[in-house]
Length: 81
Image (cartoon, rainbow, N blue to C red; front, side, top):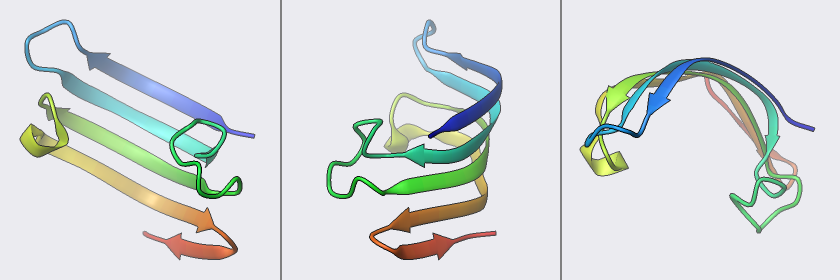
């Protein structure tokens, strides 16, 4: 089961995409979302804050924060603050 609370906007209509949002993600299953097919139990929970613009990860300008994160894969956990 996944849960997402999203407040803000993502704009792809301009020539440069912009991101201004907060998102609270609870147990997103990467396997079920077709993000990763290596482990059906690959899950993530986090609070994401974005205020940036750019058309790729390499051209992103601004700030993206990943807070209170927890990644679980094959019985292993990686936790961030």
